[in-house]
Image 1 (cartoon, rainbow, N blue to C red):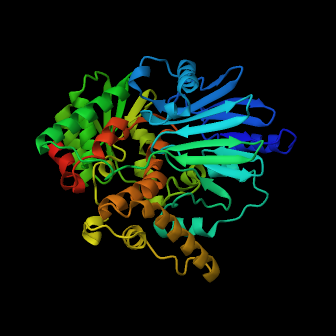
Image 2: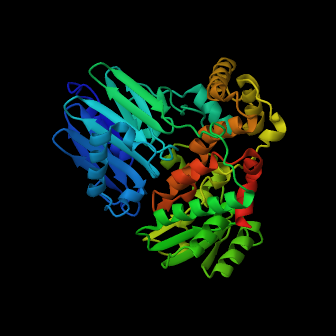
Image 3: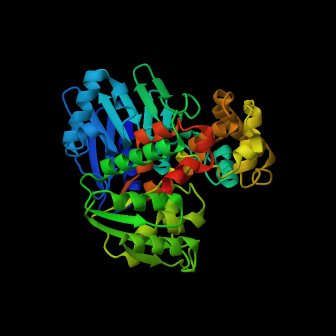
Length: 485
């Protein structure tokens, strides 16, 4: 979290302190702070997730980073101050572009103390969502919406943000529940100069499926290459890991993680678990796979109050950004007492594997065919495929019309540059930008309130390989399934 403002503005300091109070969700959370006239910076994290210190102050710069970076060149650099120095050194030597495309889920902030320029760079996927509030000569950035609400003169609900949440189950684009508070894009590079009130940002990467020539190799060769990329991705992330907590289901993603872990050289403790009814497919498959691989397995049964058990906790932690039915299992099961003391464990997650490797859960290809469509046609297919309910009746007529217009414009703007692609690829990219970033990404983000999560499917090499898989093998995860077999 950071704020850049006019040093003469005395009202910022008490609001900043209140904002920090709203971000403390766990008694063990660490808050590292730095301040100077006109600039405030905080890095808030759980010591099980990040090892500090995470803020480095030099004569000319202040650098902070959140998350974990898995670059091969820095695997043996200690997390904390040493990695802060490595990041600052590469920035000074090669510029801000050197902080883009790094392996991991991270956010880097650099404050130029002499030129008074704030730079923010995130990982490609924007997995750790951040929000911003602009005022003349002022920029506030935070990882939760409520932390920015204290800087608003008046709190107003954004009709488009509310309609998006009720209609889709998550917010589209930069929408939030509050008017004037916006969500930053994935792959973000931001520069703010308060003296000239210049706010610039770009999204430097955008899931480039369909933009490069596909790989030329046999199906067997490509399956072997995919396996090798995933195995290396896991190996990078297992560095320094001593104990693994492994959520297990019958899905491809958790099966892949379990199999790769068994074939790796990891020798630490593994605790696997499944949640749901004992007769469910996820529990039966999870138990069977764990038994075959020799992993200890625990079953977390579905509680009678699964819809409401974590409702208040989730609403406060994550500003009510998803439906309640997803809370207890995907986002909170790692805290269940059946698992015992999980301190020191790292969660191995198959996060986004299906989508990265060609899932067509909404039947885009069947709906759209393979002939390119214009942005309006693509948007109509996207709405009909992924929307849970129409806006009509959710809001008053005037607000409903405004919300519908803004929501459609967001989706159409996403799809306009993609109209020359095969529609499935264009629609998948739109889904990754919107649903995966604003909805699915809350799973590892929720876990990392308590434990570190590693996500091999988001390895840059894995994703770069996936974007060039031939369409016939990519669609419906055919190559992925071949690799599993």
